[in-house]
View 1 (tube, rainbow, N blue to C red):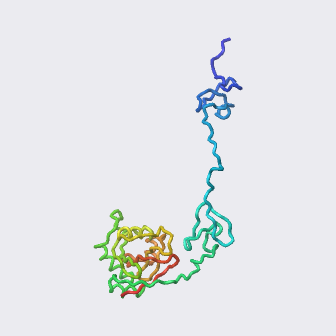
View 2: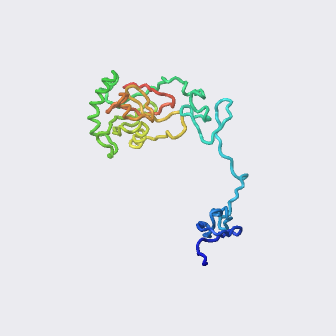
View 3: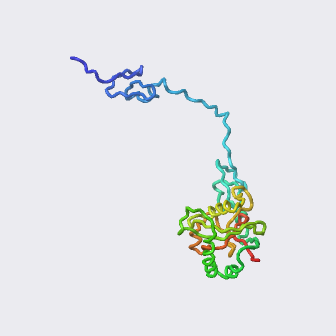
Amino acid sequence: MAEFNIGKHCSYDECSRLDFLPFTCDVCANIFCKDHESPIEHKCTKLPEPVIVDVSTLEPPVKYECTFLNCRKSELVPVKCSACFEQFCLNHRSQEDHKCEAKSAKKDVKKLIVLQSFPKSSFKTYFKGAKSEKLAAKVQVMKLKQKAVGRKDIPEEHRVYFSIQYILDGGVIKTGQVFVSLHWKIGKMLDYCCDNMNIVNKNNENCDEKLKICSAKSGEVYSANEEIKNLLESEKLFNGSNIVITNVPTHVTQVEFSAE
């Protein structure tokens, strides 16, 4: 009886079994049975030589040690407090856990800044209450639309207008009128205003004071993560409001303004 010419013999020297469904090695292209299919199982001669690394020559990873009293833990990545800028471990990362001194400082610390360039007529209205401020802003926004600058890709219905003063060391350095998107966050608005008004912004550096956007009426310091839309809805800010850009200590949440 004639034999059927089907199947292949395994190329592994210690096997040579006839396999009717043989496998081809992707590395050496030889034929192998199911038991010796992988390059490791048939001791593939085409595999690259393993790279041997002398671990003694490697630099140890950088460790960031916790500064909390008597804590000896460390992290492989920096974990800094946003208030005091100290390094902590994950167990002491919250301000409550490391008893943050910056947070415990008085939140009502105030910084007197003199506003010099906003229209004096608006101050009489602005400092009487939220209803009067809202009305004053509504009147002012009509004037701002004629001279405010902003990105042209912001749809008309999303534009919010502001009159701005940049104050440094208690004195007005620059003034401007801008429009931004109501969907922007305060941090993005600050970056845009700094670029547009050529204001030096060093907020990315580790310093005790940061450039912040504040309400000219209440002196409230707006958080960089707050969305303008939410501030408008809560009436902490109005379309047409007067705002101030100034350096504020990192832990201060309110400043005090007086009009000349």
